[in-house]
Structures are given as C-alpha cells and as structure tokens.
Amino acid sequence: MAKNFSTREENYSQWYTDIVKHAQLAENSAVRGSMVIKPYGYAIWEKMQEVLDKKFKETGHENAYFPLFIPKSFFSKEAAHVEGFAKECAVVTHYRLRNGENGIEVDPDAKLDEELIVRPTSETIIWDTYKKWVQSYRDLPILINQWANVVRWEMRTRLFLRTAEFLWQEGHTAHATQQEAIDETKQILEIYADFAEKWMAVPVLKGTKSPNERFAGALETYCIEALMQDGKALQAGTSHFLGQNFAKAFDVKYLSKENKQEYVWATSWGVSTRLIGALIMAHSDDNGLVLPPKLAPIQVVIIPIYRKQEQLDVVSEKVEGIVKALRAKGISVKYDKRDTHKPGFKFAEYEYKGVPIRLAIGPRDMENGTVEVARRDTLSKEIMDMEGIEDKILILLDEIQENLYTKASKFREEKSRKVETWDEFKEEIEKGGFLYAHWDGTSETEQKIKDETKATIRTIPLDAPEEDGKCIYSGKPSNKRVVFARAY
Image (cartoon, rainbow, N blue to C red; front, side, top):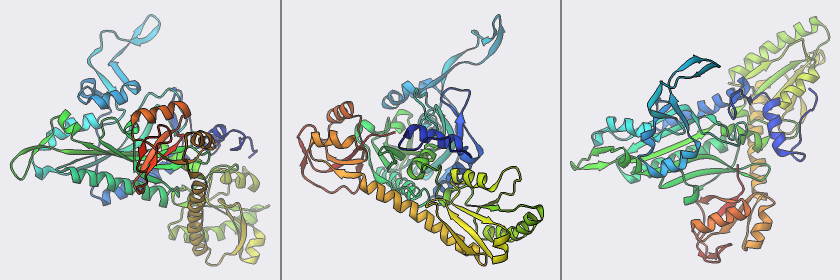
C-alpha cells in the first residue's frame, strides 16, 4: 500500500477523511450528507453496541422500537423541543409517485393530511405512546432503549462526526419521582464515561451543559467531553433530565400510592456512530488508524512468510493451532494467506486498519519455534517463543489498551490549563485544548465569548471545586471554573 494520505500536521481534516476512506470504515453515498458504513466500520459499531447493550440491560433497561415517522403536530406540543430541532427536520409531505411527462414525479393528489417528520429524536412519539402505558405507580419506572437511525438535515457534514442520517441508541425513561429521574441520568452518565475510558481508551470530563448548550426541552443535560488530537473537544455522550416537560405536553399522569394524579418525571440519553469519529481522532497517527484492542474487529492478524507452496502448507498447519489457542482465549484473529498480495503489502494494510497486533511466521520461525510480534500502538516488533503465545498475546492486548488510555490522558493533561483574563483566553484558545476559566453564569456572556472566539462552554465539571473568581469576559463574580474549548 503506497502512502497516499495526509499527515495530521499537513492537513488534519484531510488526514481524518483519508483514514476513514483508506481504513475502509465508511464512504459518502449518493444521498448528500449521508454515509455508507462499510463492513469494517460497522464491525466497530457492533462491538460498541454489544458492550453498551449489555450495560443497559444489566441496569434494568429493555430494548424496543418506535416509528421512524412522527406527526408534525407532536412537535408543536413542546415548544423548546420543536425550536431546537425545527431547522434540522426532514418532512414527508406526499405518499405516492406517478409517471409524468418528464418521468417519475410526486403525485400532487397524494398529499398527506398531516406532514410527517422523519425522526430527529424520538421524545415526542415515545411520550405519546407512554400515555397509553402509564396509569398507576405500579407501571413505573419505564426503562426503554432503542437502537435506531435518526435524520438531522445537516448542511456541513463529515463522515461519522456529522451526517444527515446516523445510527445511535436513545434511552427514554419514565419515573414516579424527580429524584429517581435524576439518579437515572447520572447512572447513564457513569455508564457512558466507563465505556469511553475502559473500552474506547478515551479519558472524558463529566459534567453538565450550560443553558445555551442544553438539549432542547431538558432541565439539565449531563455530558461526557473528550479532547481530540487537534485540540478540539468532542461531545461523546449526553444524558438529559427532562423534568415533567414532556409528561405535561403529552398528558402522561399516574395514580400515586396516595391516590393522587401526578405527572411522571422523564429522562432521555444517547450516543451515536460519532463515537467512531472520536476513536479515530483520539488515537490514530500518521500511519493510519489505531484501535484499542477491546473495540478492534480483528485483534490479531497472522501473516505467513513463504516462497513456495510447501512452505505455506507447513506454516498454515502450525498457524491453525495458534488460531485455535487464541480464539479459546476470546481473542479475535484473522489468518491472511491470500496469494494475491505480498507480505509487505499486508503489513501496511493492517497497520493502516489499526489491527492491534500482527504476527509474522515463516520457515525460519518454524525452525526456531518463534514468531515475530508487532504492536500497532508503538510500531515496535519483538521475537517471541511460539510456546504459550496465546497467554503472551492476551497480556500484550491489555498493555496496548492501557497504553492508549495513558497516552490520551497525558495529551489531555498537557492541553488543559487555567486562564484568568480575557486577553489570556483569546491567546490560549488559539492553541486548542481545554481552558478552565471563570464565567458569570449568564447566557449573554457565553454567547459573546462564542461569537468572538468560536469557543463554547463544553461542560461545567461535576467535580469543579468552589473557587471565588471573576468572569474572564465581564469581570462579574464567579464561584467555580467551567471548561471552554472549540468543538466538533
């Protein structure tokens, strides 16, 4: 594989696009702004799904599915919600085509009585449904998740990070009390943070969003924020406390133990295929994709080195045993004995696709009882004994996972700093990273900072200590620092 791709320094945006393309993760489709997720990219999403789905089910959640189409009138029931999504909605107005003079055309006689919105998020259709499901406190809590696609008509798109259609999971829960709902949003935040750090090997900040950045219709949005290698922040997951806004909009009440009619309390939460974008930008290098072993579709690739067919036969017989031993340890492995490409091509291919470990075995290795082991994260190689190789690989996979997390944490630490003045803020924001600064708590100040620097409040950290200070912009009093950054 010839190196026909950008480096991070040359053009970070192009580097990202090149990795998505050359690692065969996704490509643009015939539909503007929508992507085709290729098998290798989808395999990463399946791994993410598998882990998260298990975590949701372990905490009592069940999967269901709700319609893709939502009546327009549902959106007008929750004013803040419709305002938040109005500019991104795709609308279905007709239900039939016909043959016209210039080919296929929309049949003007097939206009819908009420337009349908293609789901940008499912709160409205789900809360209309919950009204039928909830009568008494005995029906609560409802803990539902769905794996689905959503459409948000984005004008500027980038594969995985921002597309008109994307895949995600969205949880929607209903509770008898305010505290139960708040506890739910916090529990999900912990699940997301644990997944990001232990599986994705990406350190995240946990906190709440400022009013300007909150989910449309939420009273509080909890979030995890990650830092990418170009110094920009990426929102990696959100969990929303919706209060009783949607329950009141859709008249979802329950009969309490005290025999009173009460509105239920709500949450919603989700992560999307944007996490694949986070994975790429957090770990990859100028040689291509770097994947944490826990989410790599192929954890180990084995490449035979041979000149004659007889040599390949002997090597393959030995490799068969190694493959079985690795799979018995729960390691995903691929043996690539294609005769259409030379070993050098294969080495470059799997390096670019981010496979954590590569084993190379040839006739000389067979004689010596050894195998060449290459690590993708450090691009280092060593010779190991074949005997018990599966146990050594298992240890090495853990080492790689830990190393990626440590490296990303160190990078974030180096790119995080406190700023005290507006001049300092303007200077430092150009260098990227997380800036910890005082803010007066007003939406006006937040908007002015964004207008002047393109930086937003990414999160108000949950563990932010009380600290008297002055707002960097207005000079008004502030009692804690918030995190600013430019973001995706």
